[in-house]
Length: 371
Ligand code: BGC
Image 1 (cartoon, protein in one colour):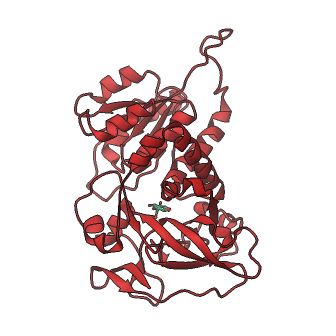
Image 2 (image 1 turned 45 degrees about the horizontal axis):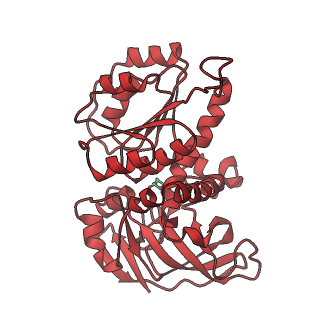
Image 3 (image 1 turned 90 degrees about the vertical axis):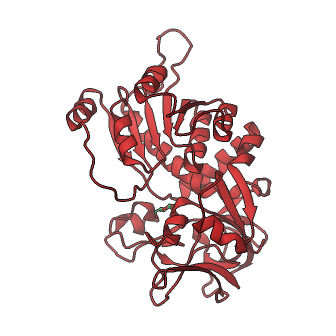
């Protein structure tokens, strides 16, 4: 079968012939891969900045944002059946007994760093025609979501972040009204940094959670991303036209920053404007540039005097996948057109060079596989 593979030794990306996988344990399922999304991580692996082939292989089959259809199940499989659409999880647990996270099926919080990630680190990924894996990594998706289900994995980033935000804010009466006694509740304000797929899907999740949501991105409006943002009831602010000071003034108390750019300089500049009781969530992985100067006194003073919380979040567990599938159904109902436009185009496997190595274009590009 065909597969898209990175060869770090030769520094090549090729469409290769890869061995067809077979079910080898009663709890495994076999998937015919329908499609896979191309993300920044795939492009970084293709530029050989990231990515590790499985032990003993000189290549890594890439792809981790995917949708598959179950075509065969092992004798002990109970969670899925042939014909089901599923989105597989990405991370696989480390082998260590003392890793309580991995031993509790929460490898997204792995302590040892010895986890594997399909299509990224130590295990082949999903940009291929068939995949075999344990049923416990499969998340069933309703058929009605077929057209957009490849967005589940990137949406899990926001879902995992939001689950943690709710937990953190249990520290205060987060849902209290601005004017007690009046029934106009205070709408918390979220600022999303970046209008790529992670930012836009995050903005949708924030609007659904009733945040007054602002998306800050480079390009000057009008542009297609700005229209998408406005069509979901959020506000697009361009860095070309609004300074951070102006943005902060416009938003008021910034209750939540959802960073989705991987740009550390911008992020730490924005941190200066995080509001009272605010939370700053990092989701991007910056490339290594040189050190920069930041106003650490101001940031530390604000963290303390404004009860702020800063956290980073990576990968996602089962609960975030379930939340993403639920939210995607809500997005589809509320904004069918906007959701469709997150997917810029679908391309055959043969277009891999342009998609992985060419200039980034559009929002989410998708590679059609055996489906
Ligand atoms: C993937 C995550 C993964 C992370 C780090 C992201 O692109 O969506 O599943 O944990 O990269 O490798």
